[in-house]
Every structure is written in structure tokens, then in C-alpha cells.
Length: 333
Image (cartoon, rainbow, N blue to C red; front, side, top):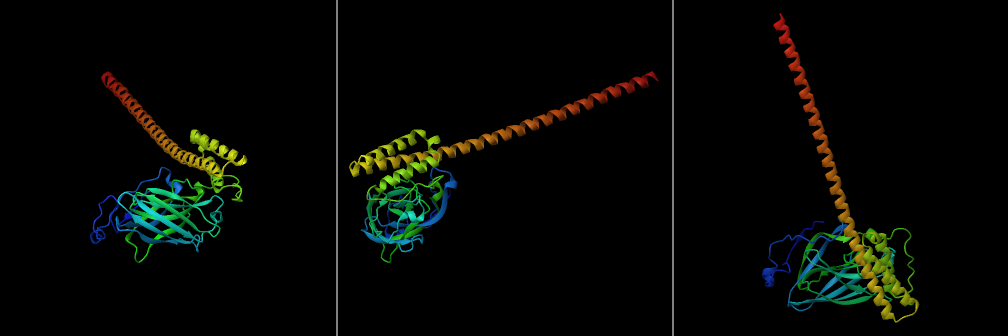
């Protein structure tokens, strides 16, 4: 999916210039990376990114609601250094993600580079009041920061359920630029076929990560991972069984969570690989169909030309015989 990126400041690959110079750079259009999945899996949306001053100290930004959960809000402290950028996000007034759909179980904080590379900064775990915190790092210096609802925390690409997005404050050290038509994963890629998984969460007895792992395996299965990525899906399914066994024997909570996270990650790998292989299969079938149609057209053309030549040769032969007969008659006379 093509995306145009309009800069009000520098690309992170450009060496930092003084602010007065950097903010006067002409607009640039940089080709964006395309996720390894069919275009039909995504929906486009314009998102705002911020270019942070490297070495300028920490700065605050707001995280404002997109309207899906109107009362939700947040803020983040961002500090860009030469080698790493730290992000400390605080979120308030989020509701359970299952209210957006049974396939959604958690929230994830993202940093998206100007060329479209999505970095999953981590899962935002909520307390009983719908508040959460997350401290993370990234090597990006210019990026969009936003929160999405997801079916499990190991997702590779943000879903279209965008809850909060970054916004400048009056004193924020940075400049906004816009990424047009950024691809967000359609929720249909995470909706399970058939009956939805029963999701009456009992987090006192079962860790959230277990629900996410079950969700991840079911989604991968519904997206054809058993057929198109059997080796990876088998690992995911086996990992979930190990996590379920650990839960059943009341193992240490950390062990259960670790196993569940591994199963979810393997499930996401299987889902993504299945989507990629299905797209490759679709392209190969289209090419084969086009080649077959071209060959059939060429054969039809060759047959028509051969038939025309036969007709032309037959007419010429008939004319010669008749002409020879006429000469014989004239000679006889």
C-alpha cells in the first residue's frame, strides 16, 4: 500500500541540524515499507508523527482519544539521545478492550517510523481503574506514538482499532509531520471463524496472557496457519498445551505466563507466515492463469493463420487448373 509522508522536520537518517535550520527543510516524500501481507488485509489512515530533538532533554506529549473510547487519555515523556530514545507512557480511563469486540484482549503501545516500520513497544496492562503505565526504549528519533486494541500482545502490525494518538503540547520539543495512508491491520484478520472463543475473563484464576495465547492460536488456525505454516503452527499449538498443563497443575504464575507468551508469539509467527504464503500462492495462480490465457490466445491465432493460409493455397491451385483448361480449349480451337 503506497504512502506519502510529508515532513515538517528532518528524517532520522539526516544528521541533526540546529532547530532553526531543521524546521525549514523542504517537504520530503520517502517511500514507505510495505508489510508482508496482502493489501486487502489493511486499511489506510493518516497518522501524525513527531520529530524529537536529539540531546535536547526530555519533553512531554499528550495521548489523545481517537473517539473509540472517548474518555481515554494519556501522556508520555520522550527523550531522544544519540543511541536510544526512552518513552514513558501513562494511560488513564481505558475500558476493557473486549467491549470493542470479543477478539480484542489487550492494548499495545506503538512507535512507527516515517518509512512505516512499526515497533511494538509493549503491552499496557491496566489496573482496576483502567489506568496503565509502560516504560520502553526505541532507536527511532522521529516516530508516531499511539495505542491500539489488539487480540494479543505479540502482534507485528497495529490493528485499525486505534485508541490514542500522540499530540504536541505548546512546549513540546519537536515538530509534527503527517504520514498519509498508513496501513493498519483490519480487524477481520483477527476475527475468528465460526463460534467466537468464550471470553468471560477470570483474571484471578487465569492470567491474561493465557487468554491471549488461546486467542492467538485460534486466530492463527482460522487464518489457515495449519495448512500454510504447519511447522510453526505445530509449535504454537504445542506451546499452548504446555501452558494449559502448567495452569492445570497450578504451576508458578511466572512459568505459566512465560509459556503463554511463547505460544502467542509462535501463533503470530504462524499467522503472519500463512498470510504471506497465501499471498504468494494467489500471485502464482494469477500468473499461471495469465500465462495459460496468453498461450490459448496464441494457439487460436496460430490456428486462424494456418486456416487462412490453407484457404489461400486452395484458391490459388483452383485458379491454375482453370487457367490451364482454358489454354487447352483455345489450343484445340
